[in-house]
Amino acid sequence: MAEQGFTPPTSEWYRPSADMVAQANVPDYETVYDSARQDLAAFWAERAETLDWYRKWDQVLDDSNKPFYKWFVGGKTNMALNALDRHVNTWRRNKLAIIWEGEDGEQISLSYWRLWQEVNKFANVLRSMGVAKGDRVTIYMGRVPEIAIAMLACAKIGAPHSVVYGGFSEQALASRIEDAQSKVLITCDGAWLRGKIVRLKDTVDEAVQRSPVVETVIVVKRTGHDIAMESGRDYWYHDLMALPIASTQAETEIMDAEDPLFILYTSGTTGKPKGVLHTHGGYQVYTSTTLEWAFDIKEEDRWWCAADPGWITGHSYIVYAPLILGATSIIYEGAPTYPYPDRWWKIVADYGVSILYTAPTAIRGLMRFGEAWPRRHDLSSLRLLGSVGEPINPEAWRWYHRVIGGERCPIIDTWWQTETGGFMITPLPSVGLKPGSATRPFPGIDVDIVDDDGVPVAANEDGNLVIKSPWPSMIRTVYGDDERFISQYWEKYRDQGWYLAGDTARRDEDGYLWVIGRNDDVLKVSGYRLGTAEVESGLVSHSAVAESAVIGIPDELRGNKIFAYCILVEGVDSSDALEAELKAHVRHEVGPIAVPAQIEFVDNLPKTRSGKIMRRVLKAQALGQPLGDLSTLED
Ligand code: WTA
Image (cartoon, rainbow, N blue to C red; front, side, top):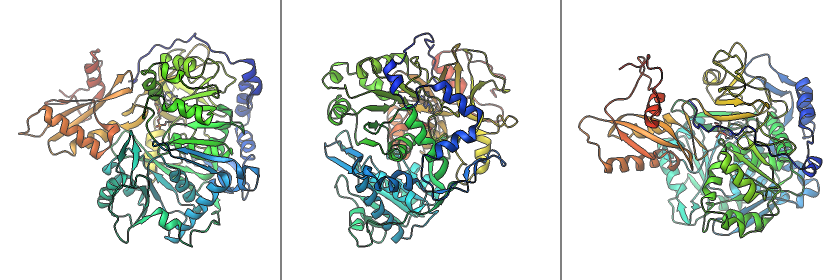
């Protein structure tokens, strides 16, 4: 069941200019792709050589215990070694690592030297509070420079971080704290969004009540409004950073290549979020290679990934990969339309952004305001544009290309997932483009589209997207749940040993790949990933709701919007007031991104005889489509 149903214009081509190809970091995709295919281990070893290691690996890939692959076995390194330590010994110490702009216009820039010092200071703070190698630290913050500092400090001391997106509410935060068993939580008093304060610390207080495992809360002051500080538990970041213990020198923990770098919770097919585990070694090799090649990063670039650090896109491509490459990474705190719909274009012009990477939903959102807003600004610094998170519809692609990119910037449409760590299907700037296609697999990645039996489907037919061989930044496991890791990703094609992505895709007659959308109970709403089960459990946690089912309905702006069906408990009557109350309840429990666009009250739900809700039937009904095979329907 694909989420989107456009017919791709498979013959519309955009060829790269000769200049673009000549200057590209990888001018010839085919040759590099073939060389990687011939000797995968040698290919990745060569890439790993570009990074620093305390000790070189003994073996590039250990596949003796599939699907628990290990990369760079025996290697010793640390993300912070490559993202920071190695740069401060070179001229790059004086280069800007992070340029930050607050929604209120405040600006902060951090050179590599300064960022390294701040990270060292905070690493010392964390150590002094008893955080040791292997301890999980939860980070729940707005888009402020300190979120990068906190992540890097955790990496430096070998404490895996678990960043929870600041748009999630108490229950989502509480269950992630609980699963990771974090004793330390780093947050902000609040965050600025559309001129208003998002009261993050209030949410933390409630979440910690639900998950009392947290012993220490560190609070960055951003908005300055009054918040409760619990003595003995809550500390101001700036107070801690002013202590003598917060010296600018800190040892970097020597980590095994396979030691965990972070856990990032993502939505799956059950209500319980999955903690996707990534490690220090393979992840740094893969994310830096993909950024360097797909976005052609050069020393003088100003790279702006406009995602949130709380999602994988932000982890890999705001924080880690750009810093490994010694690039300048831009972070903007607030909403794209605040105070006016040209805020982003103003940022591009003000900082001379050369590469902008964002999501189709943002492009569609800004497109609505018309061309006059971008036309007011000088966007000539841009040389490449990127897209991620959901399929980009050709109309948005063309607008982005013409109006923002001035018809000279290739659009790098990257397909990947939290689980893959980095781009999997993406053009390089030297590859010809078709609007709406993520084009070709990245070198070293073996992608296919197959039917339920594993037989490759014919050109232009829909099938399941699979990845046939391992890659360095692949998910290592679901934190604390190896069984779920296997059943989710490896069970379906166990005999073949392929990774199941959960997406429907097709390949056209030119070998170009078109990702259509999710084919499981995961929704993409405005590029955010949500499980239907998460929204459903949010709904049933309200005392009026006995049972609920949630589906995604195609939406022009958001990609999908959420439709919910609820059975009420005996004696409760449906009403508009109740619908509003349930929406507010979901916002409070799960977060604003999970609020259904519409709630329908029903007497029963279509179920299989074994009691599973048939969302497919609900969706077909909502869209007025044929209901399909109903033989397994109970009633
Ligand atoms: C979808 C985001 C089409 C896809 C990096 C995938 C895309 C899910 C694209 C992962 C793209 C991501 N074209 N679909 N370029 N990029 N997706 O884990 O359905 O938040 O499975 O990672 O987003 O979402 P996640």
